Length: 188
Image 1 (cartoon, helix red, strand yellow):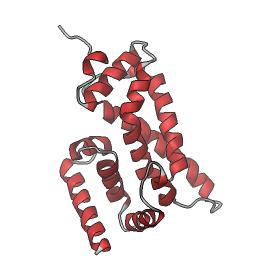
Image 2 (cartoon, one colour; image 1 turned 90 degrees about the vertical axis):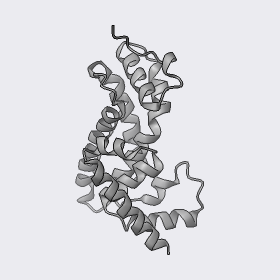
Image 3 (spheres, rainbow, N blue to C red; image 1 turned 180 degrees about the vertical axis):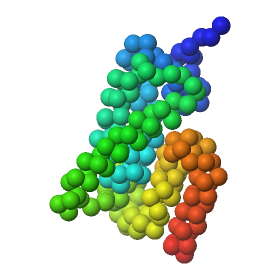
Image 4 (tube, one colour; image 1 turned 60 degrees about the vertical axis):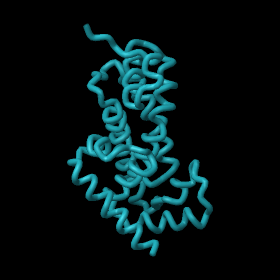
């Protein structure tokens, strides 16, 4: 007999299982589970948004909108053991909407990518280190940058990044290794 996992039973479980339990609880009307889900998934969602948008303020907007959307859409969530793929898909769609919005805005030339402020959040690095990070990240392609941020900042495993980005695992690993090689070379 199938039993839905509970938040209490999943406290010491891996993040994925805890997130799944929270989504099921939200789906079943437990509004307090959203707070637990936020504590589990906010950092990866924000890191993903930064990797796509390269702007702290837009990324914060996506983070906020993502959890509102999760709360409103939880009724349609089907547990399949991959809650982060579902959550990041919501964030991805919100990022795409933000980019379309930005594209309309940039036709006036008013927007500039801003890695410096994106990495200023919760970053203990000095201004000089942030400037070096910004310079290094410009060497990477958009895909390489996204993979590095999702792995190094958000802490996703390569296979999780593959699920999130709909890329084959070996492609993710290849992008990550290529990006790290570029970064090492630039720092030498």
